[in-house]
Length: 277
Image (cartoon, rainbow, N blue to C red):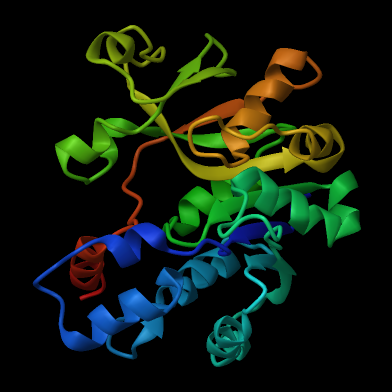
C-alpha cells in the first residue's frame, strides 16, 4: 500500500520571478516576485496554492506528505501550519541542500534523493512524487496511489491539457510500448517525432510529473543520476530512463485525459484565479 507522497517544493521559482504580466494586481505581483510560487494565494479565503493540492492529496487517501523545501523554509512552514488542522495528513519536511559551489538546487532527481536520505524507510517502500506547482485532481492522485505497478507515471493525453498550443507543443513526449511501458522521453519533439510516437489509442502522451516508485528499485538510480549537460541538473526522467535501460525494473504509463492547472509564470496566476472563481 502507498501512503506517502513526496511534494517537490524546493525550487527557486525562477521562471515565475522572471516572467512579466501587466494584468496582475499589486498584491499578486508582489507574491509572485517574493514568495515560493506554491504559496501564492487564491480563492475567496486567500489560501496558498499548495493548500488546494494538499487537500486533493488528503481526499485521495494519502496519509503522509513529505514536502521537499529549501533550507530557509520557515515562511513556507508557517503558511502550511495555518491550515494543517484542516487536512487529515501527517506533514513533514525534507531539506534540499544546495552545495556551496552552486546557487540553485540540483534538480528533481536530487530533490527525491535527498528526501529519501532524510526518510530512510522510503528507500525500501513504495511512494509517490509530484510537483508543488501543479494542481492534480483527486481522481489523478487516486490513480497513481492505487495501482499495483512497481514504478509508474500518469501518461496524460496531450489534447486534454488546456494550455496555449505553442506551450503544449514544447512538452516532452513519452514513447510507450504496446503494454504502456515507458521506453523513451523525447524532449522538444518535432512534428514528425510526435506523429511517430502515438500510443495504441492514437494519442500523444506527456508526463506531468506525477509518479509512483519502488524505493528498493529506484534509489540507486537517484543516487547515481548524472547531471543533464544542458540544464546542469539531475532530473527524474534521466533516472527513470537509466533504470529502464538497466532492465532492473520498468515504468508503466497509466493513461489519463484531463487538464492539470499549472503555476509556472505570472500569466498562470490570472488563469488559476479564474479557475478558482
